[in-house]
Length: 220
Ligand code: BG6
Ligand code: MG
Image (spheres, rainbow, N blue to C red):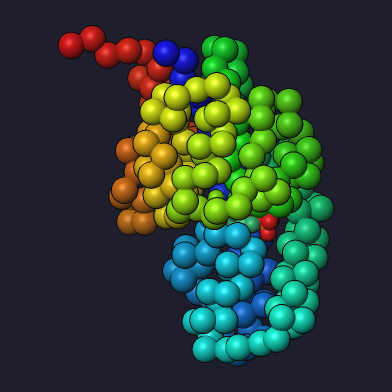
């Protein structure tokens, strides 16, 4: 059966997770709330709107719809200022080599991201050509940890969900991959991503034969 590969974007392919954090930290400060890196883990993989809902919740603040829309818009403007400076040198270590190897081996590749900026970012770092399909915040109605984003990806790749392998840096994203019945590769720390099938600090920590391990049928 054909295996399919699905990659999250922010925090997996590029370090935009840090830019999201910086921009949300400033938004939270409007309510006198300090967004720590630890709490920020809960915002990873979460849509723009749900992120602000969580921050308001933590800050114990409530605002009008108008103000809500203004803050998410400003957050995105600040975020895009960081993104604008990105080049292909900002692709995280080991990512280009691994994804190219997957492509050369003939496996189909999808992006599975909650971001509405996904396409623009992939274009900026010159990676669009590696993806057979892009599922992002413009196609998805149910946010991670709902499996929708990855199930759409699998169907667009013409693969069975159980033959798909997801690369994710977020707690919600690993849960989404698991809920889709896929193999999940956590990128980051065991502390948050213990529910993933495998966890590696980053792509340079992959064993040399990871692709073979993931795609060769095991004989027993
Ligand atoms: C996810 C990020 O990939 O996309 C979240 O992990 C972010 O931090 C979400 O909020 C939505 O992104 P955007 O670019 O549409 O605001
Ligand atoms: Mg991510």
